[in-house]
Image 1 (cartoon, rainbow, N blue to C red):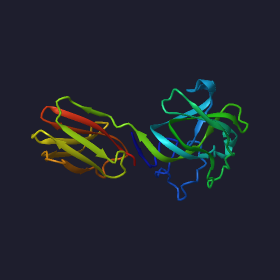
Image 2 (image 1 turned 90 degrees about the vertical axis):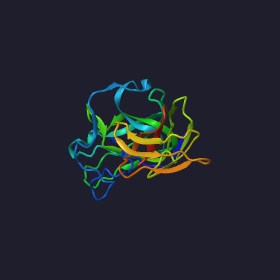
Image 3 (image 1 turned 60 degrees about the vertical axis):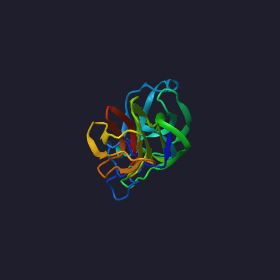
Image 4 (image 1 turned 30 degrees about the horizontal axis):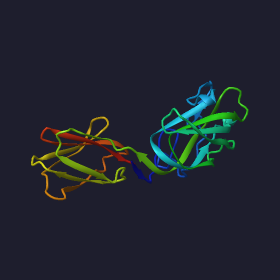
Length: 253
């Protein structure tokens, strides 16, 4: 299990990675299109919430979360759709949920300089899924929603999966993993055949390729990664003769 401080951005959950197009990144525009609106209640992923207005965020990995900043509905004609009271639940698997609490959200201003507010602090709780349920809005009869949320991330937790064929006579370590820029692999082998290293993204596109000859003793230390690698999961494959090993590599940003 690996742990590393990082910042992420995904969907309507923004964690300061540059999705803002305004001069002041905390300001939110007044367009209804830049918001989540629910006009029909449905069964919640958390059965304890029942049929309700809800939105679930899948962050992709398990993160250690900190402070949560929320922008309410900011469309001047529909400020009453904004969430006034919300329940926040978290989960690491999308099935078992833990309530973080019930929180008040101030009404949007309807102004282009609206900057939202800090609503709560996860206090370094681990979560992959964040579920927000609107319990009360500002008077709208049918629809409820939010514009955007931003959570502070204090770390990322990810399992590094390894798949190595039984006949392999090499050993490999990767660090740091996750990484932000470049990472290192240390490879040692008791066999003499050349080794082919490749890095592919999850769409199967080749990112990097190396051919090396095994070294005695401590093995070979390689610096890998490049500026073409965007944040995400990659597969490092090592082949030597008939043996192959596959390792998960995570670029955090």
